[in-house]
Length: 252
Image (cartoon, rainbow, N blue to C red):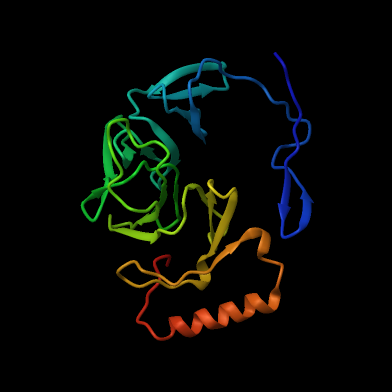
């Protein structure tokens, strides 16, 4: 078995930071071959590693205790991103069915969102759950099923509230892909694949209209430290705009 050492280099705001989430001395090991399109890995202490095989239409489980690789769920309907809700249930995007779903403890699938204003999503890609149990996901158009067409004129970022309500948060990115929160949940990061950029929303400074339209602070990470005076002016200007509207926070 070939083993490698790796180091993650992070570039931020013109300054280079050399840091790695990988423990010193850790070794990279090949755990599977023959997977057609691996995506969406998630570690669950009680199970091990789960990951999607989009083209293979399966979710696999790798157990480190015996190095076994088994099918965890089939068909997965081309699942991609996966995460857990606060009850430990698997939340997954299913691109073949163009929806976000939940896998119950008995293995059945419960759809959570499949349309926006009566129109099907493109192909929900990645998903993350906030500590208030709300679900955020991206919907680019990478994998609209063969023979089907896009029904929406945009690629969106959405939020499913704890009560099940759906809100469109952004419709301006071309290929919104990976999505995650900072550890304190004050920032929401979204990868824009078409532009090879990562965008960040400063959640603690954003308030939203009930209907879902929102004034947003959208900063490229690499520009965050470039111009402090410009940043301060933008924050003040946006706050003035916010003060003219009856708004409420979607993030708690």
